[in-house]
Image (cartoon, rainbow, N blue to C red; front, side, top):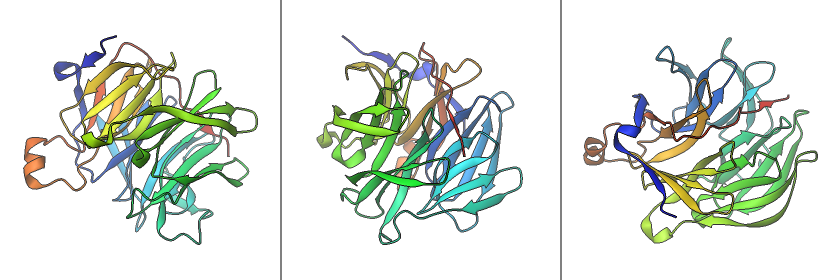
Length: 300
């Protein structure tokens, strides 16, 4: 099957921005807004596409790596090494536990909320990105943290199938996305297997991902300027080609959840590279003809 290609005029720059590294987009159905972070700068953005406004909430002296929506309002976050709650309306940050107090070289990277209201987040080595020091954690609404997977090489990209039976989890510098059998009631994982791999000789690696209502996995390939759509069997059926080299993550949003929003980065780019791709760091949008599912709320 020849993949469907989205490029050029099909790709819209929804928000021109210049963060160091845009990441962790989450669509709030309740607010009709896209939350995303500039993780290195410690900033949370709330973008309202209908109004064209982008509010910025700065966390002083903090790195914020991923976020989820809370049922009772506000956000659940991972900072550099801690779980936290944040309330944009008040600016109050409530730092919680650090699950890796004896691993100062690790930091959080990506995370997402499952459909039972639990927040999942993974870690990575902060400087040796290909080191297997990371872990995957499940943060339950009762503030209990469980280490679910160890020996992770740069946790990146989490998602669940529409029927909640399969969990997808990327390890960037294993150049792979793994699938697990998922128990929605217990939050348990089993039967880890390779879902897909990326040719490491091409320079690209798997970054963030989302799963649409039909069960297709949309995986961002950082350093290749593309988002790839896989069927539940791992077959490539679509490619979104972006005008920037460093896309980071994606999520479905909009009133009908049929717009794929894509965050990007300009981290480490030279002046020459930025001149060639001046929209690096911006948020892009494409309507690929399929809808996503509402993002769950953290129940704690």
